[in-house]
Length: 160
Image 1: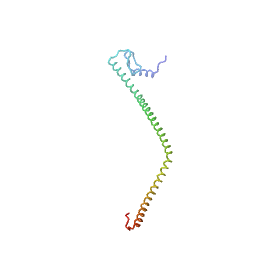
Image 2: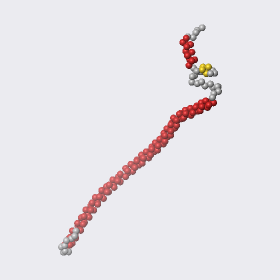
Image 3: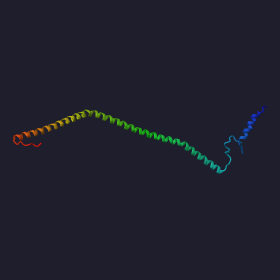
Image 4: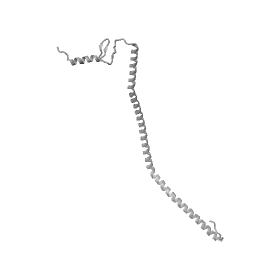
């Protein structure tokens, strides 16, 4: 009873002109494929299509595996870094312990080093006194020789 409007009829006619027709089944639902699943095709075309799909699968698999490999590499690098930091931490702890022990030993040796410094100063003073005493004893010896020579009547000069 109702007739379709002229604009709806025109749109339907225009749609049927845009879609390619299948030789066996009439208009197709998609313009992207005209492949008929049950129809026999050229074996060379089938072989090439299969090869193309296999290569596409291989390409997509590699494209998806590349980031996975990157993440595995990053994971290994992170594990190596963690191990290095653990080693460096252990070394730092050992250095801290050794430094603390050396500091304690230095503090224990400080009074002894002070005594050594005092002894060294005393030895220096004693050495200076010994040089003075040596010089005085040489001068005294020369005087005694002079006095002895005068007594013996020589009146000669004493070599100094």
